[in-house]
Every structure is written in C-alpha cells, then in structure tokens.
Length: 379
Image (cartoon, rainbow, N blue to C red):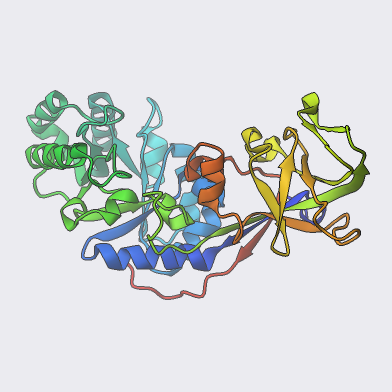
C-alpha cells in the first residue's frame, strides 16, 4: 500500500474524475438502449484504477464487467456487488478452471480446448457453469473459427455442462465506421452465433461500435476507452467528458546562456539566454520519449514548450515567456488537461489514447474526484 508521504512528495499528480467516467457510461448506455452497456476495466481500468472505477460504475447501475486475465478478475471480483457479472476476455490457461469456478467468474471461451476444459470443470462441480463464447468474425485474434463452431454446436454434452450466457466477437475497424469490414463482420458474427447458440445474448460492439447503427449493438455493448474520455473514433464530436488531468511538479528553474544545450545528446541548443524548468517525471512515468520537442506544458494558460530529450525521470521546459520568478520549485504544470487534451497528446506521440492511458505510471500522486451518481438502475 502506498504511503501518504509517497503521494505528498510525488513528482506529478494524476487527477481522475470518476463522475466524468460515470457520466460517459450513462450517456452511451442511453444511446445503445435497449442493449445493455458493459464496462471494460482491464489493465487496471486503462491505468486509472480498476477497483475505484468499477465501484463507481456499479453504484451507477452497471452490472457487466470485463477484464483481460484471470488474475485481474480474482482481484476485482470481491469489490463488486454480488449480482455483478465479471468476464475474463482471454479465457483460462490450463489448470485455472477451478479457481475461476470457485470465484464464480465467467470465462470467455476462445478455443475448443478452453471450451472442453470448462465443460470438464462443470461436470466435476456437478452443476452447469456459465461462460461466454467468442467467435472469430474476421479479426483473426481470439475466438472459435467457423469450423470450431460447427464442432462445438454438434456436441450436446458441452451445452449440458456449460450455460452459454453470451456469444461475442470483436470489431477490427470500429474506429472507421464506413469500413466495409464492419458489415462483413456483423454478417459473419450473426451467422456463427445463430449456429452456435441461437437463443444466447450477443455482443459485438466495443466503444467505437457503440457509435455505429443499432444493428451492431446486439444485446450487450462493451465500453472501454470511451469511458475514460478517449474518443473511439478520434474525430471529436462524441460528446464525451474528459476524465484525466496530469500535472508535473517543477524540480528546478535555471537560466542558461546562449549556446548551452539541454538534455541527453544536447539536441536543443539555446540561441539566446533562456530560462529552463525541469519537471520531476519522464518516460518511466509513461510520458512518451518522442514528445521531446513536440508537446508542451501549460502554466496559467501559457504554453511552455518541451525542449531537449525526455529523460527517464525528468523533462525540460522553456519557461522564458513567464515573468522571472512566476514559476517556482514545487509548482504543478499541466501536461494533460484543458489546454492539451488526451487526444492531442496521443496525436503528437503518433499513437492512440489507449496507449497513453495504459502507460501512465505508478509514481504519481493520484487524486480521485468522486462520482455524484448513485442508485442507478442495475442492468
């Protein structure tokens, strides 16, 4: 457990707005109704703290949650309401079936081998065990092939042992709504689901799919990056609230003469005397190294460019535009926030918002703004 002293002396502060996460969930849930909306809280809720995020969403009425691996589910499960449904997207490695069954979790069965081991576990337990089954509708990542579906559909012993509570797949091009692959995947998914378990609920849409037509929504939409303020279409206009603010602490401010270099490789050389502030965070904290010379920090609305290479634990800023003494040691400057949103940081780093969020480090002071949404309708 982190100590209060750790947070008090951290080099940066990450503020996570739980109210914004819940508002994003409720807005998309209303959009996709009558389909249910699930929360994907894998990778520690995209780096923002799965326990706190999931509890806030559960209090607002969410009852379907997805993580990637069994360890995440075993850790998160005790924090959720008794009627919550927690799914393990990657399924189970051999030997993990008993732990999953005892914790009353729901594996997503992605192969015939996983399906057969789960059925064996159900027979040993003497009761049907619930599971989702994933089919490969065209992404070639996880899920049963069409041939696998035929084999499983023809095995009544599997359905006697396993309660298929969900048939699911995943869109490869949901961030490109007009991609022909989306329609092809929808058609393939519906055909495979009909062959496998025609009466089971279906789930195809992720965050991007939630902004597609109702034909993609099925019975359950799995919301990931959209919950956390990332625009799943990277086009703006999704109407989502920003969730994170990242501020880094000033460690030192100095004046350098013309001709002085800054940072490893001296890639930035001052053409005249400049004031340089050093921040107490770097790529070890998830701030991409390639943002050196591209991104900036902001202090009271003033843009302060990053100069030189980003180090493991430090970042250089040119603060010459500020009055002498205006920025001091210990002050916090904005790296992600109103002046430099999450999407802008991802664009400058030539990556996606998912990677920025999940890379955020553990050395930050973390501040959670509570959710005001309580007593939502359980789904």
